[in-house]
Length: 174
Length: 149
Image (cartoon, rainbow over all chains, first blue to last red; front, side, top):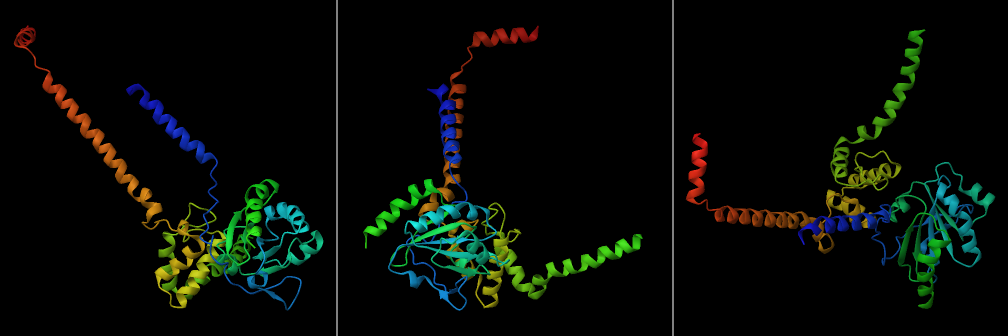
């Protein structure tokens, strides 16, 4: 028995390290899951004089995508978001800390997947949502409750694995 | 020439210094509180840095929010609550003692207890072994004879 102890210890350690390989330290657990989305009223980009607040999206399941023109991975997920928008998913954008005011031109040039995208210039609303970096995407249900938060760009694999099952479930509850 | 270079350098150095010092000069008491609180808070971008020490954009924004709240008369606990409401306990370097963190807080004590037990048992066993060794008189005589040679 005794001589097996080092081997067992090694196996336990290896097990921990193996699991650790696949953990993402950026996946900070969000305290918002199951809670109402923070309230905000922000100006809509490209439509001077109009504002948007989450209450306006009540009654449907929607995504809040936090992005910025200076963010490279946001550009990477842009084509996929366009695809999602075309397939009927409601996506709202929050343009986070766009100090160089590039969002409008960028959306005009590349197309916008967003129903509207709001302008969070000083980043305060982003902080209210616990944003640590762009892109981040929240799934918000019909009652305005946050159901999921995804950190990092969305691609087909992430969508199929994390979003689709949840959205199917949420759509059914209406 | 040298003087010109020096003057040139100074001309640029002065405004940069002024720019960085500005927020501190504003209200030293608040800044001291932010720095003290920030030591125990995690910067969420560069996760092994404290919020007080980080130069990340978000850390600066969070310090700005903390500053705003402190100026509005919020106490330290309320400012921390503002952050944990948004970023969870993850932002705290000293997580609170509650069911999910029991293992985290008690783990070292448990490991110490396990180590202590092993240590105690080993010592006990060694004692027993020493007690069991009873040199017989024959062997002792032999040893004494050998030593005297």
